[in-house]
Image (cartoon, rainbow, N blue to C red; front, top):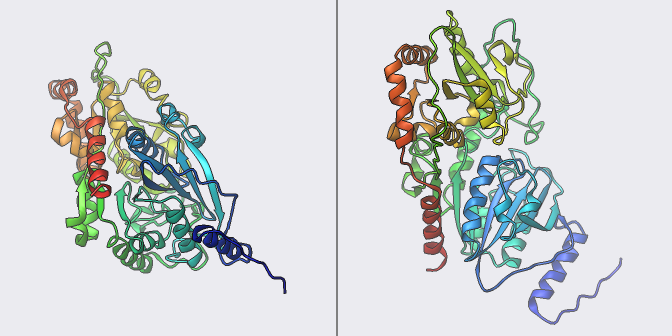
Amino acid sequence: MSHKIIKSNNLNSLVDAYISVYEENGVLAQKTKINIPVDLRNRNILYVINDNYDMQMMYEMVNIINNISSDYNIYLLMADKSTINIYKYNPRRGNVFNLLDDDLRRVFEFIEKWYMKHDFTLLTESKSEYKNVYKRIIRNYNIDLIHIQHMAYHTIDLLEVAKDKQINTILTLNDLYYIKPTNTITNDKYMQYDENNPIVDEKEDDMIDNTYPNLELFNQIWTKRCSKMFKYPKYIIAQSNSIYDIYTQTYPEIKDKIKIIKQGYDINVDDEITSPTLNHEKPARILIPGDINTIDDIKYLEDLKKQDMENNLEFHILGENKTEYNVESLAKLHSEYSHESFKKQIENIKPQFIGEFLEISNLHSYNLTQAWNNKIPVLAINNTTSTDYIKESGGGYVLSEDPKKAYEKIVELLSDDEKYQIISDQIANIDIEDTESMISEYINLYDNIIRK
């Protein structure tokens, strides 16, 4: 047996030496060489996100970070199924990030990586190797506050370690992950399709393993675990009243913990852009932004199309079909979705409406801003983020979740030029919370938690 002599001049280096021994012998996950650039002049906030992040979520997060980086040091913790990575935000690079930017190195500097011995799955609730990494991160980077944007590929150990260290956490509800954690989970009601679109096996989600239970059993396990997780954050952020309603129906115990901070948008309507008009001689064009990730995504659109026996509607999807479903039987596809191409596609397609019908649109409404900036009314299914703004400000119409009723309302709107014009005219006078107001709310929240 070989022996290793540990020498140290202080407690911190002694602890690091022991941790290194543990890692070398498989007690902890391996790590890369460590370089910890901690600026002790400011407090330190750790943002947490998954590796398969949504670009709109990342855009909003970086927008907030860029505006608070003069007062706080910002770290980003990302995870995939087998690694945990930590980055430090570089404020000199922050202003170059945009929604097309999929290269984190532009705004974040990589610091450290851990290779986990066990891959993360949806059944991974707690593991000692994850807990040890979280302890090390919180200690080495002097973390004062943790803001979790997404818990995918992270374990509940992060919240438990933070509580043990008396560090407050904030959790933002960015999507339906804590209700429906993976697009592979599909309810039977979504599985009835015609002979032209037979059911095919979805590509297996990399968070699912061989012991994955059936849907009914899994839902019970998942909601119980999330209920436990929701006990830890000091605040849970909902970005709209709709998100609040969706989550409190499943988790009524979090009602008093939720703080609503609405997504801030800067509406800049170009006066030179001409509002669309109706043409009763041709089908109305409805542009639907977003990728088709699963057959669930297309279900509502399919049911709308079934109602359209007289061909009153012409659907256009700005995105990529990532399923085996024959989407072109319902709509025309227009390349891969990117925000840069949004305006150009609007000019080419000339839609009368932007439709938020896809599951991907449920909790993000950046598409709403793009539509209004181009003077196009929005049709949104009830209980989405966009519906809150439409109810408050106009500029569109909130449709029933019943496709038959929704179709009847769309046809009614298309037959009434005056009503359509009123909705279009409302866009120029829309007054919703802007980005600056949203960021101010986050700054106040952080200051109240950290600087008390």
